[in-house]
Structure formats: structure tokens, C-alpha cells
Image (cartoon, rainbow, N blue to C red):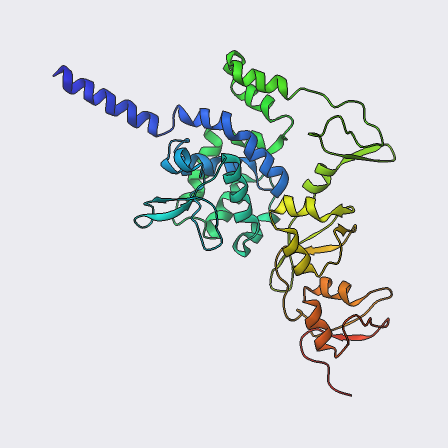
Length: 349
């Protein structure tokens, strides 16, 4: 009889732990900072990312998370060239991505939402409206479970994950400590917190060469604006022409930094945007995918100072196609007020 009771107790506590009563807290303490970092880069609420991570991994206990650092169940797909592992999900022995670090999994999840047209409407929502995001994910087809939105909302509210939607990467550890005061007795966590307190040396107009780990900073008047802050302010937009993803560059930036932010190679960005240099000027339009072969309107009258590249970027059309439609030699520029054809080829005069 004692043996039966013992077995029952073991099974009960195993089930208790698998449901995440204990591990949910540990997961949040460990991975909240990643969710906040992703929120700053891709404008996805940290509460949503964390709730999805908790749900997908069972509080970090899933085989995919532990053996493959894959926290969001992202499958290989045809464009994946990294390590893989077999796992039974919707079908036996499906191919899943394996990451070197969980942070890579978090970023891949952000790109999955940011670069797919199904989720474009999510980015019109307020980042603090986690309920709208949860229902928006379900509506966009992220999950088949009809209760998926309510499960995410329940995770968020039970664990107060919404508090991470109003913090930033510099303050997230303090937010975690406020949520879990007992962590003040955790040496590893407190050491991490103390390490994050290291201040920047007084700023000057020169590059801070002594601290290569810190971002370069620019001084404009009395306002200090970091390169990281500039990059974080870039929002992905959906172009009226076929919903193509694009951004508007807020300040002069080098292509390498934009490439790193969005995880798209410089060569692809140069090809898609017909760039001839590595500097992107303020207010330039930059497409994050290949442009269309025609515009979304029939014709357009050029304005003073516009060239063919400006028009191609404005209407999301490939530059060579634009030249061909208007029977112009490549490199030739339009006159002010000239009628430019965007869909059909210009009629012969």
C-alpha cells in the first residue's frame, strides 16, 4: 500500500511540475530580458512573446527547448540552413530548427511575425494592448486551438507579464526583481544586476573608443541619440503595393547596421533597393523584400527634384521595370511634371 501511495505522489508532483507552477516563474526570470530586447527591436509586446514561450515550452521543459534551444516550435522550412532535430508534433519526425542560443530562437520568432504578411495588422495595435495582440494572433492563423487567445491572456495575467510591456532592456532586471523579491538572495541574479549598473563614461562628441561594447553616440544640440535608439525607432510598414514590407530610415545610417537589425544580408538589401553605396540617407525608403514588377496605380506625375530611383522606391516597383515601362534608357531622369507609367507600357507616340 505504501508503495502505491509513493508512486501516486511521484506522479502527482511530476504532473504538478510539468504544468509549470514552479517552472513558469523560473522561465520568466531567465527569459524576460530576451522578450524585452525583442520588443525594442520589433515592436512586439514582451508579454505576448513570453506567454508564447511559456506555452510552447511548458515553462522551459519541452524537448525542443532543452535540446534545441527552440522556444517557439519553429520548423525548418526551405530557407533554414542551420542545425536541425526531429520531433513529433503535427506529424511524426518533423524537422525543427536548432539554435546555438535561446536568444536566437527569440529573434527568429520576432522575424517570423514581422516579415510575414499574415501578421501585418498586429503591428497597427498598441504594444500595451496584449489582449488585442492575443486575439489578433489567433485571427491571423498563428494557432489552430480556438481558445489560443484566451490561453495567452490567462498566462499573461496570472504571471503579470504585462508589466514587461512598459519596461526596457536597461530596467528589465529591476522589473524582474520587483516581481520576485526573493531573487535578492540569488547570487547569480544579483551579480547580473550589478553588472548591468556599470555606467557610461561622460559623453563627448568623439567616438567612445574605450567602451567598444557600448553603442556609438551622436550629439544633436543638447540631445544625445544613440545609434541603437535610432535603429530601435525604425518601424516595419506595409506598402500599399502588395503589402510589401518596408521601413523609412529616420537618420543617416550605414547599411550594415540595418542589415544586422533585420537579419537580412547587405547584398539582398542592396539588390532589392538598387543601392549603389552603403550609406542610407535620412527619410529614404528601404524595402525588406523584393519589389514588384508594377505599381499600385496606373500613372504618376513627377515632382521637382525626383529621379527614377525615388519613384521606384515610392511605388515599390523594380527600377529596371520602371525604365522599361516608360521606354527610357537606364540612367535617364524624368523632367518635372512628366507622366510616368507604373502598370502598362507607355504608348508609342
